[in-house]
Image (cartoon, rainbow, N blue to C red):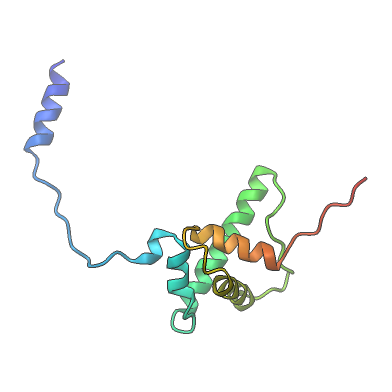
Amino acid sequence: MLAPLLLVAVQAAAPAPMTVDTGPREPWRQGSRTSLWFRCGDWRSRERECTSYIDGVAEALSAEAQARGEPPRFCPPRLTSYAQKRAVVVRYLERHKQLDRASAVETVAAALAAAFPCPRPTPR
């Protein structure tokens, strides 16, 4: 019984953690469609960052589907370049501006699925 009271007393007496004001939050970390547009809409200035994010999302979603035994959400041809995937996502962002509330991950997935649909399994 004394241990919980002692813990509360120690926590109350401890100095508050120091915080550093780093300025406005980086929109990229918030994960919205708007933050994706912020990085990829003017992709020439942030080409590497945009491309890396899109490729990372694509790889993660593919790995997740495989781990769950689910079919993939999109099936780009084997030799699809990073630049082609980025162009698909940027074009999707330009055409679907009404999706401001969508997450960046879902936006990337939807763009890739629309551009690179998977073949339907043949019925037996």
